[in-house]
Length: 468
Image (tube, rainbow, N blue to C red; front, top):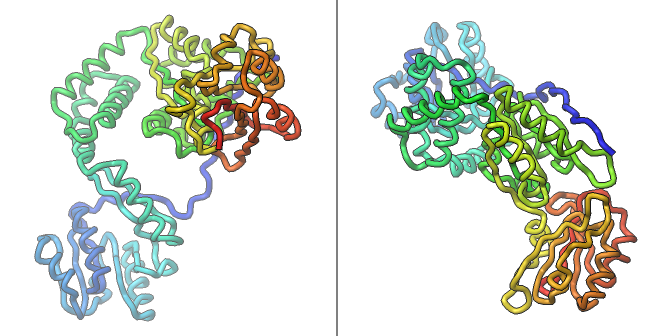
């Protein structure tokens, strides 16, 4: 049974609580009302963006005085604000306790044409100020629309661990190099290829600042790539067992740069959603005993998209190099003279072991792990196994695609000498909210599994190391 690749229509942007906007303030006037530490933070933020900041407050806190002394573009006026103070302001920022005064400040700012933000007063504000990750000129804003500021701060903290402070050097280099790249003679697609190469290098050398030699090398690589028959490339990416948090950082980066994503049926929507929003998404899934896209057609589609100059991500469940027909797709790309990379993922065996909290190896009972597929091209149990190795009491066996052939596998392993009491476990949809675990022995697991209505991908683990 075959089917054709199925492209998913582009979706409209989901509702946004607020529109993220990055506002240029260099040399522009910003008014801050209030003398508290909160007002000091707003003044410091605006000044860091290059604004000429004027603060109006009858009582100045120590933090605000410290900032005014340290920054030449922050001027303090020890008096209450007036309507005339807001004329010509690009922004109006306030930390005002009195309700009536806050509403008056809002009205005066709007009359002067200045967007206004009042701390802890979202209904009186034109915009919200979120948590910030500062790797300038790379700046990341995080907002929950005022619903959960503490959560936004936690997200910011997580982002800061992923993007070290030294990464700002790469952002500065990108800004400094852009004019030269625009004048390099490269066309649009080649310039885009340059910045993709730049990004890959940046993430591989986060702690080291880029050099002019790096720029020259990247330009040379890009120009040589433009002389090749095609500039397209494919990356085989392991989507893992289902939990999107198990994707590698490299997989996330590659997905964020994709033009087209060819994905399997087993890849959940939560993983697919991490791809670049503009990327085309094409389902090329293969499922046992169900209509599937032929492998030859998938490989041909990879090559065709590559020849169009596309950056293609081939998103596979688990790890692409384990029962994922990766060799066929890699060979097709290489035969076509196209670049191909691989980003490994968490394979089902590792996820299944984690689900049952049991190591696949043990110094006492399992010194070898073996992966097999119990599903032949005809849908039957393969006969060409080394059955003696599979029945070895000192090995752990991970059986992929073995749900339907489990009864036959059980009978054969016992016939080959495996102890019928050897622990065996089936894990369905490992690492997902719908995860299900069926425990037993190699003798009774088939009967237990037959009583379950299994819908998702399943893995069977067999071996003495799983006991307990």
